[in-house]
Length: 417
Image 1 (cartoon, rainbow, N blue to C red):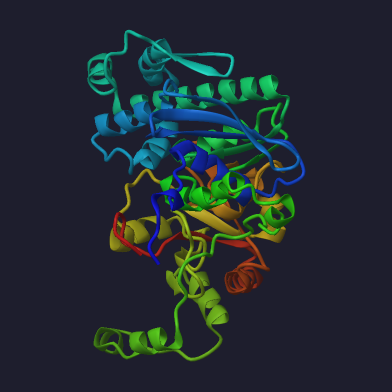
Image 2 (cartoon, rainbow, N blue to C red):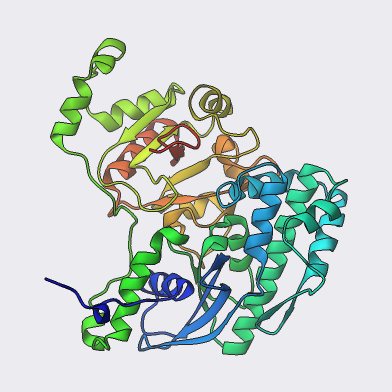
């Protein structure tokens, strides 16, 4: 059937971000402030919208002044890493910096951006994003630059979101866009007294724009509220492809597998738990693949989180990750509260937040804790939505007394799954 131009609907970048985040969120029948902030899309860096208790959307603000995303990307480039890809490395490096090494970077960045109410104000003296940084920071240490940039990002986000709450009188926050991938900043936001609840969806970057466009179309077509109620909140991120019995047979019969590996018969989760106890590393490929940038137990490498040797072993022989980057723990949902400091504002299902680890659990999770600030990028494993992974960790828990595992993606660093 031939389509007409009138059949094509166009939605701007940030509208797609906030519609995806809203309909993915658990917030229904209550007012929500939906914020997006990234490196730029359709001429905008940041937007503020609200959804009322009936799900009706209203945009309050969209502008090209919130330069946190592009500046952070240029810091990434300045540190000789890939912009729009390696920002998480800057975030991981930041806690290593001493306060006095961050001062020059923080002071320069503070001069180029301020906030008035819900609006960012970019300094007119900033002529470009890269060479201005090169000149201003040419004598600074690499860790001080990373630490100063992270502090600047966190402080600006905390001020901006506090002002949004004051302006809208709405304390339930949804945050999306590339900057929402900064899990350390998300922890700072969640600790704000003004924030009642905060949700950051899985895949909050540009990978989810197409989903947001579909949900934005509902309002454009004036779909009835009763029909929109059928759109349930996203309760897991296992939205990708599954594997078949044929895939498994092809794998087992592959010449390299037959030549180099042995098939061990038995109950897989119990066998894996015993191997973890012996500090072996397990590769998992089963059930539907995760959507977004985080491995959540279906395409994962897992290991004993209490063994520091695990980190160097995975980095040197498998992943090839940078030495300063911490791994993440996957913990069964029943035990999350016993492993992290109180934080009931966040959904830890998608590794979109860090949390402060409890002192009593640091020995058990030493391989997954950031060595300088003792935070963990926690993943809460659901018995309902990830039953096989939950059962594996439970088997390990029975053997070790540790209710979680080290979890990283099933790939070589920088390569596909």
